[in-house]
Length: 480
Image (cartoon, rainbow, N blue to C red; front, side, top):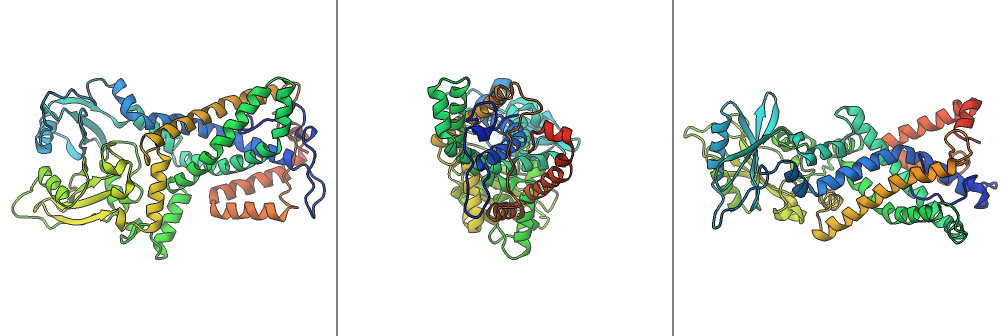
């Protein structure tokens, strides 16, 4: 596999094209070759992840256009002239009539031309039942992974359904920082050599130059997406959340952070593979006293939430058991027509008593801590929603650029490898042990990102104790 940002030199040695750089207080060493080598090995970890993330991200970005193609007549419905959406209780009755043995866990109220989605429990899992909101007819019954966007979402979060998949994705995200930073070093230090190769019309010069510029333009986006995606990660995200909540620094404002339960409710009731909303899911779900006068129903919950100022259309988690509540969300996750989809500051939730129809508590963006507000805004940018069409266009261009980098990098590596043995890694050694500045930077990253730190220690130990002592491995990895 290749480096991801630039491959600026002839296919022999990196140090043949760029002279060694001498830093004050250090012996003469080829920093360019060293950065190139680390960039190369970081790319081995990062390229598969970036390919998956970019491709799945594009599918998620255009889910409203892609999902209906695979299920015509189910998700998108015709709107009769002058028609109005039926009350949710009437649509709920249609689901119960079609599937009397199921329990409704939640619903996602759509917008004009879309079906209402009822997530129903089936054998410990969920299936989505789609209802035409103008006729009350059931249009389809699908498993979450029947939708390409949900399948892409599952891969975007986790390579596999196992804990290892989440750690592998987090590992790749951490090393993407190394790849991007080293790529920028190569970009600026190697631009003259690239230009000379283009002027000589050297083989592959145009591709490597295009690759370098695409990497330079996409690099900042990669760094931002890695940082804004860290709250979702298995080790860093959960550790930081738990630590903050346990030290009186809750990221969630007035709620108890890691002890809250709305996220668990959403995970059990939402018929998608998406993770629950990052900040809003930390809301505490209250309990109700069992009423003597019967239940009020979903329409009353909608009326109460609207009166409380929760923006529509809603995602509604149904009461779980006799003491449960209706959790009515106007959030950034479920429908692009909701104002919170592009403006996270409008995100809000209300918990409605299933017996009285009164709002027990509300939880909104203004209740988040400043950190949670910042993270929520970052996630909206991460997902290409924050600034409407501008964000989606920029996200599309970014994903396409990353896919180009992932495809062009192997081509450049193959061309450079010609006539060499092994994997033809750039020949250079990062002076971790002799450069205090570099060691300090790596130490800070290792502490801040534990998965990166553990992997770095393992790599350095393998390099020192195994690779450099076995001639065959030294030749394979082109190690000094």
